[in-house]
Image (tube, rainbow, N blue to C red; front, side, top):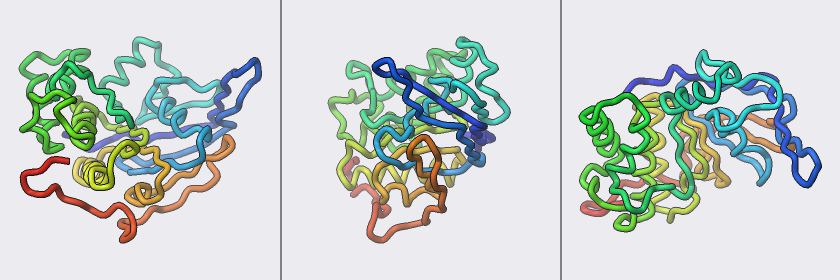
Length: 250
């Protein structure tokens, strides 16, 4: 897998939703710059725009004004079909609820987004298995989600996100549904994607202990980015690094 060349910029971005006939301003002329290969945590109260920011960067939503630039691509310049193709090649999504297909095996879930690419069957198998092995789930490739723990399901979901070798990983509360130890292991994995593979990671979280794993913490509130501060490398009272016990999964 290649290191990311994808920095992220928001230039004068505004986004307004209509609810009950009234406009709700989520972002108001927001600027943000994230370096390629950075690991950023996004924090803020509910409704502050954290998930909207991920959707804008991932091309799932468009701003009412301003530009979203990922790498050297101005997303507003892309048609819907071109945007979908760009997204499949450049962005991996990780969700709180895993979003795995229950009737498919771990391998088939990871392979699923690769069906939208031009990869051959053999290439898809190689990519999917490599991604599963990176998250230590290669030995559970034939297991269905119902046969996995929550932590294992999230690791499969991360494998699915990185299978196409995207430059950007967008994670929306990836530890929100996990127990403490499983959350630690998922955060360890996110850290590896950053330090070893050089991926650009934007991670939404409500938990300051999870945010401390990032190198930068960005705070959103009332339509503005109100604060941007450096995270810490480790936190003794937070999510420590946890290795799976021998013979046990997450």
